[in-house]
Amino acid sequence: MGLVDYQSESSYLHTMDPRVKIIALLYLSVVVFMVKSIFVVLVMCGIFSVLWSSAKLSWKSWWDFAKVVLSIMALIVVLQLFFYGENSKAHFMFGLQLPDNVGILSNYGPKWEGLEFGILLTVRFLSLILLMPMVIKTTTINQMSLGMVRLGLPYKIAYMTTTSLNIIPTFQEEIRTIMDAQKLRGMTVFEEGKKWEKFVAYPALVVPMIIGAMRRAQQMGVAMDTRAFGCSKQRTYIETIKMKRSDWLYLAAAIMIGAVLIAGNFIIPQSIVTMILN
Amino acid sequence: MAETVIRFENVHYHYPRAKKWALSKINLEIEKGAFIAVMGENGAGKTTLCQCINGTVPNYHEGVLKGKVEVLGCDTQSCKTTDLADKVGMVLDDPEAQLFTTSVRNEVAFGAENLCVPVKEIFSRIDWALDIVGLSEYIDQPPTALSGGQKQRLAIATNLAMQPSILVLDEPTSQLDPVGTRDVFKVIRELRETANMTIVIATHKSEEIAEFADKVLVLNDGHVVAFDEPHVIFNDAELVKRCNIRPPQVSELASYLFDRGHDIGSKPILMEDAYEAVTRWYAGGVQL
Image 1 (cartoon, rainbow over the protein chains, first blue to last red):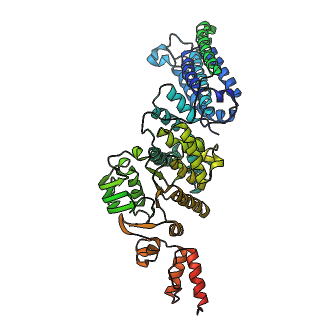
Image 2: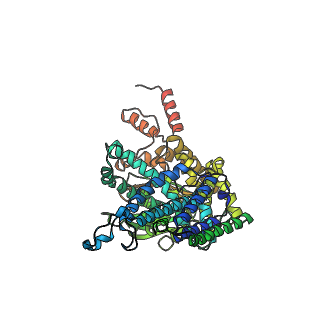
Image 3: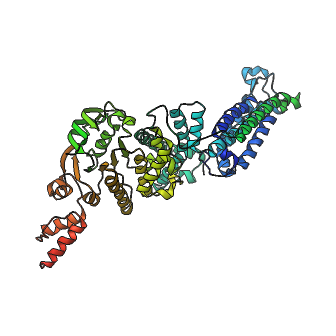
């Protein structure tokens, strides 16, 4: 089970109107990046975790993806640690600051603010990889595209967006097939090789995947055109969506939570480091 | 006289960057309700010919098309593929590439929804199409959960829901085992019998062609070299050899015996005919 394929369960998130989920997703994604207090972002991450669990979604699929995100974020944390902010405003760790006579280089060094900002970015991304898949995994592509259309997006764009999400698991499957095929030809670097060897060997996976993806996209295009995709601006839908009372309540709750978090951002100190060290 | 539904008038087609013409001097008329099999070795032009019928060539692929392809009165060069969708259904060889929704029901409904068919009518078409292809019990399943043969039958059903007059199938059984192949051909025969649909199928499966097709169109290097009834095609030893066509096994057996001086009295292409011929031959006193 991947992070972006629909997971059939019986939870309130699965039965929620897709429009509520799309609006909440867009709104809370903006809120995640608006708030600067690490406390508030941690609270948001906590709320999303509770929602994830209540929708009975797989934590394993989340953790598999989170591991990749964390390894990338580790690099960003290190970069932020050394290159964050101006010399005059930041607090260097353990006095590790280069003397002023090295010019611009004296601005760079391990800073507490850099570490804090790097962690803030990491928690923001972890929140997003909880929020976005939560919507995708609880909504079928038909419901999602219907929701987008009802929100005013052109049907062609709505369908292409949801179909591209749906095709990601297919590509994951294709990568596994290519990997097996390369193994059968004696390529064991992905099992036994060192990290840099794997990195160098990636073209052997990526090139066939891109060629396969282009061929598949062309065939899918033909298949969709053959079935009259986009022949008129209007179309009928066998599925229907209707905002229920509970959907309005969920939407109101999402807006309220976002508003409270934004307000909290102004009340709670934005930087723990500044609070402690000043 | 039956109505002509597909007409090729001196059609030539050249793919971009290709060294030679994929189709040359194609003149062809297919009548309503006919079951036409297109045969020829790989690269003979079968897929290109099929794609000409639903307008994928030249609308989707770049390249040069000379001549005129007319389908139910529409010139495919001036009609979009989507405009031809309610007239011509197309089933590709790879079932995976043509199924892209999350349930069998949605997959079948997709085309009819695009054509703005009323919802009530779509539901009755879904039931009808799935009943014909024998997949009614899988209506709520995701297409990925189906076997290869079932996926190909679902691909046929997705086209049926649009109720086209013509169904073009490009090697629909190339990835299927003999049982799956048989199932697909039975569905196609039923369609022809119940809905009087015109069928054009590109395939190498000679046993099924011998049993189901009215006529066989043989392509070689982009040219039509023969267009006749299956028994005429499969019994033309020179044609079969030149175009690399594998005739039905019973035909091969009859030829094998004939070459060794044993004339079984006829040139069967169907198992039943071969059985009768061989039985008669035995009854006449075989001298081996």
